[in-house]
Image 1 (cartoon, one colour):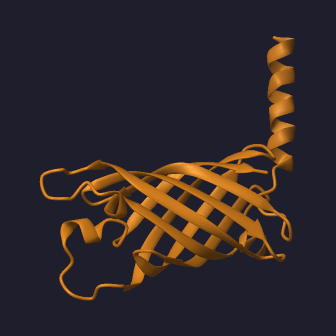
Image 2 (image 1 turned 180 degrees about the vertical axis):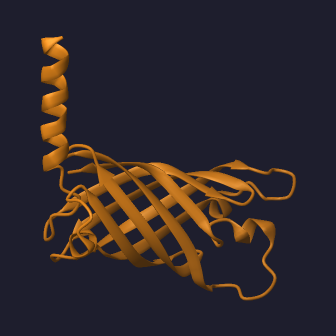
Length: 164
């Protein structure tokens, strides 16, 4: 019983000291899943803090689970990569030191868009995240083929995040 109480105490202390975004030099790696119509993808991103409340980075996804009945299986259709800018406002809204809310913009191979993400850290190095992505400007403004809709529509990302 003493060991269980000690473990709970140690975990509680580590939860209290988890910090979501530390500003200049902060580095985050996120790995997870990307959910969209007709596909499920793997997602990865890297963000680097340039100031107290902003970061830049890169994000990429690759569609694995595709409805193969009408979408081409070409690598170019499945893959997307984007540069991104985040405004990390967790310390502004001050919900919890372990929580970060980050609206941002991204410019990729498929579109120019915006995202809204949230991170919660359980320890200084490990947490969970989710992001909502919306395209603002598609590179092809006509009727898109099903393969052109991949990564060019409303998507949701979810997974784990690590501090480096």
